[in-house]
Image (cartoon, rainbow, N blue to C red; front, top):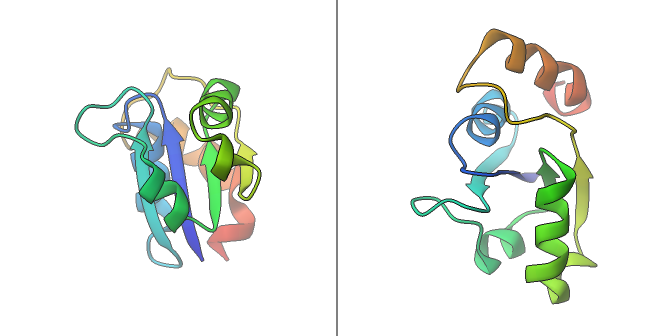
Length: 103
């Protein structure tokens, strides 16, 4: 399964999540505000399932990619932008919320 993780800058939360699941799935990550790793139409088309860290990213996809939005399975993880890359607490939260994908 192709999993896309979306956060604000594509540096901490989404990158950590993508690396956590990369052994079991194809993964990519992107940021809605990122200049180096932006969320694009091509990346959205690539994904089978999209995980947004907050409702803000979900609403961004709805607004900016309306033709793709309704065709995608999108999940909001409700993980605030208070963690750094590979922070233990962030990994624990991701493992709990993504446990079905880690099996």
